Image 1 (cartoon, rainbow over the protein chains, first blue to last red):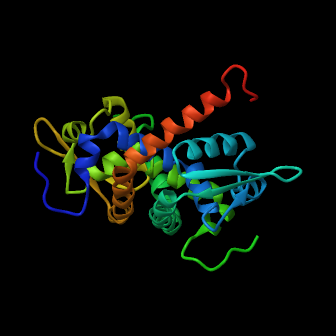
Image 2: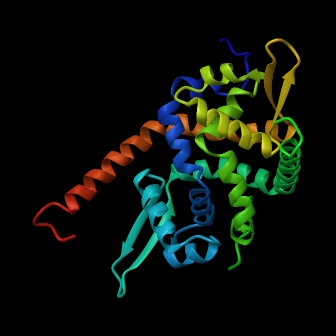
Length: 136
Length: 136
């Protein structure tokens, strides 16, 4: 299968599916994106992230922070104060990622309503197709 | 919480978390991205997608195609041939999305090795920290 010349790394997906797909899975979950966007403006504390990312539970925030730290996307700094102050900050690699995620978030915001309408229309078609007396 | 002026729609995540987060979750899973990238060059058949997206199971492909069709990102056209030929194609909205996903895929490809190293280093730090005789 040959691809036309485009700027699209389709090859990447097909030839190296596992690692790239795994990276994408890590960075592109809704909570990962939420954290990376919410931490984009500089060092931020756990409670601040919790406030900024509506709907995230303490447990999901903890798990996702650990995952992003493990991936080298966030640094976690413990300041020797009483009580200790812990701050999270994007690494250079994550700041680069952030640009792409912003585009994605902008797209999602822009097309949210259209996607919602598409879903309603799809469900209506499906329920019409499976209504009694109609061939499935 | 006020944000400085940036090009980053942090507000989007914090104020409208559910719908945008849900959209992101749908379009940014590894298989969704794989499908959208693999279908980016024009109408494509199921078996062709299956071949292009390494590691995807028939079931996951089916489920993700249905999800993307429901979201209005793919059209599914049944040609009245014998046997019927079914083709999937990106909608305009999905082609726009594709630009952002390409950036993300490129980033993942570029930083894959660095992420892998970060994980190894993290795991080593953690296992050193929990080794016998060390305070946890």
